[in-house]
Image (tube, rainbow, N blue to C red; front, side):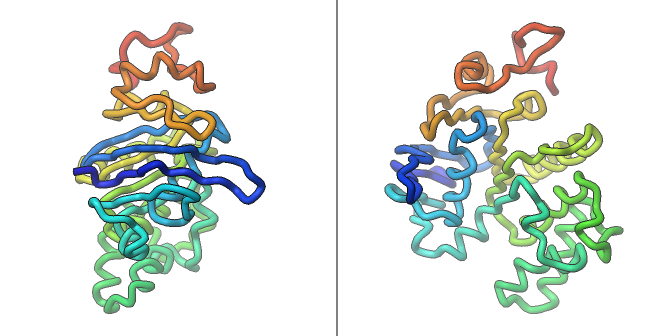
Length: 249
């Protein structure tokens, strides 16, 4: 059974703009899915429906076979969303406070919150920054902190929206290694990007969104060769299109 499913999902903004149009998508436990699309394609709008941050104009989202409208809080525990700009997620004055924010809002006992925070920081390797102000961290560490804040909620699914935006090479490596580790730990990963080079070789599936519609869905090796027609740059090697994806690893 899919862990996450959208059925005829449509979102129309008040000005009449159709952001996503009749999207049917099934995500299975343990998958690593890259969701690609040009800027403005609707992929971020789609992702914000996965845990109820946006309400659809038509259709529904199911988690473990149940509509998320039955229990939005439970949906947000199961689906963690890491935003493109982590600064917009931060509310705590320290790294520890930031990671504790979600569990505290579940009214969990302090000892349990402390344990959840400690585990999340250990997973992303931020223990030594626990009393640091989030806003003075490097770009890569901010992304790892945003991931830790999501991990503290113990989600089944982690959705990352353009996690490499604005990062230098060391920051990209840090974040990518963390994402791969989370997948190895059993989390279902949905990674939203318009840059395929960094992640495609690690994914088991490539989904392409174009003008609000799901236009491609399949194994990366099969789908990637049609990416350019949707405004997505093909991965290149020495000026040529890739013939296989193994060299990207």
